[in-house]
Length: 118
Image (cartoon, rainbow, N blue to C red; front, side, top):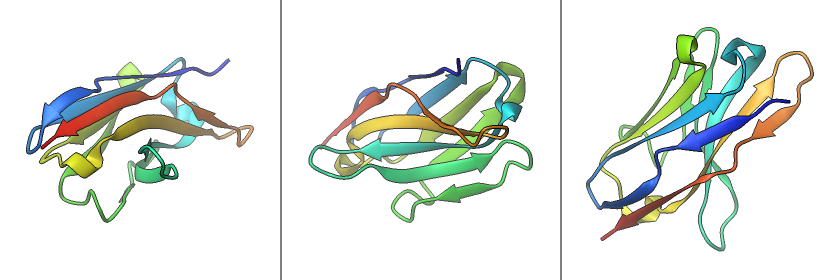
């Protein structure tokens, strides 16, 4: 059973930083791609950033480009989201997801709350 466990959320003032972590229960190379999504109250879940586990190619939502960085640590089976220059509109529950290579199943973590105060 694949498990993704997020951590690192919290309350921060505008302009501050947070680093989210997503720890996978097995090797991240079992996944083709991993990503971070977020969902604010009353809004649809949206993509924030993605990274391929092999090449490490990345993709970002326009709203976070230049402020957020996604990265991976293969040895720790963990994907990170470094969030800088946070804005109140970044407030949301942030979810990690992963697309499994063999089955093409998509797995989600339980989410972690990020709140940015103005």
